[in-house]
Image (cartoon, rainbow, N blue to C red; front, side, top):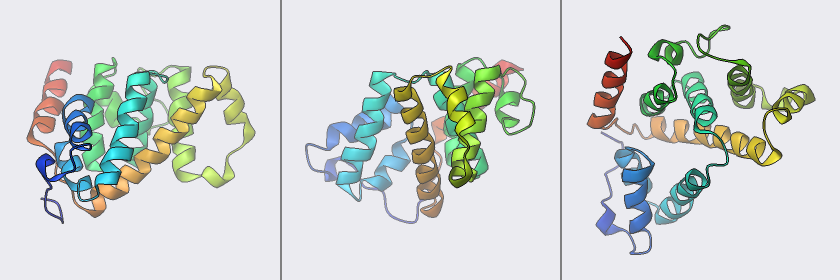
Length: 188
């Protein structure tokens, strides 16, 4: 249970309710998270709204987005985000073992671009002030500038969500655990 009470969708202003609903159902099973964010309707409107809009545009391939999110969440030890995004990475064709070992020097199932995204997520999370130009040159060989900006945005936002979720002790939804276990069983 979170450190603050859940706010139900009906308690929000009418213009924010559709965003709450879409985020909790279409974006993913993030109901517990959005119920906490709902203490601040502008956060639901703009932060969740932003994520929904970025998801609709599909500028960045889902595989790379999920690699980045899982990497950041593992570095920050955010169980909520790892449990939500690990199965999404499995849906992108990677094994649960790959998800578990995503921070290892060698990652089974990763190609050169996957490793580049992983390494970039590590640098943005841990060493952003010491990054060298070379990683951007490497990224530009595989991604447009728009994609590099979105990848960076999503990595930084993930760090924000990790801190928010853990500070307020947002609980993992039951269906997330079921989904995670089904992906593990399917891989065996």
